[in-house]
Amino acid sequence: KTFRIPVYNYYGLTETAGICIGMKPGHESDPQSIGVVLDGCGIRIEDANGLLPPDGQAGELFVFTPSLMSGYYGDPARTAEAVREGWYVTGDLAKRAPNGDVFILGRRGDAIKDARGELLHPAEVERVIETHPLVAEAGVCGVIGKAGEEYLAAGIVPSKRVEDEESFLHEIRSLVLARLGPTRMPRQFRLLEKLPRGTNSKINRRELAEKIAK
Image 1: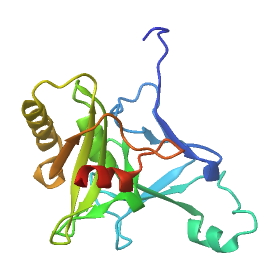
Image 2 (image 1 turned 45 degrees about the vertical axis):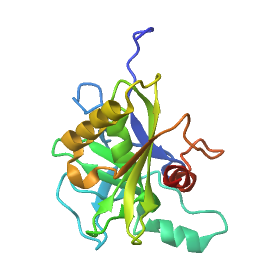
Image 3 (image 1 turned 30 degrees about the vertical axis):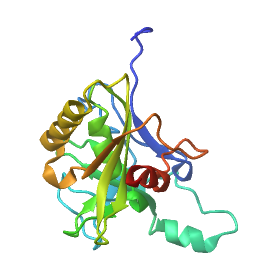
């Protein structure tokens, strides 16, 4: 806003040697998305059974691009795992809207399976919680319950002192319920001073789970 310069989300990897998905000027993309597939590239989203789910449902993101790497140096086994018939296996979970917008939901390894067998994506819930004006950042993780079941839990760093924690969390729950429905509602919330992060600045979900479970 200060410099009146537009900022566009995009998606690309070292292995793709460039941008594959991005926001195009003139295309009305959802600001939470990473944009649409760019010319010359292609994507497909596969569910756990290798099938292509309908728009709006999550799956693993595969990317095709003419600039895809030839392989990992000296590691043919890893190359064979990452590249399948010219498609790069990103390890990212994504969904595509009917208008073509692509949304990243998180990493495949971060997803948890609830008691109903449904995959829950922490990053999807984090983005919704962080839309609340009093939330500086949020971290969502899986916590193991007493019966051995895994459920979602959320750590929240408020942007300022929260005077009424009960009312604040009620607003957060209402927000998640309205945006994502009851199945993606974290069972447990905890206010934190900061989120545990690794050296790469990514949320350490294992440590976060330990903090919440205390």
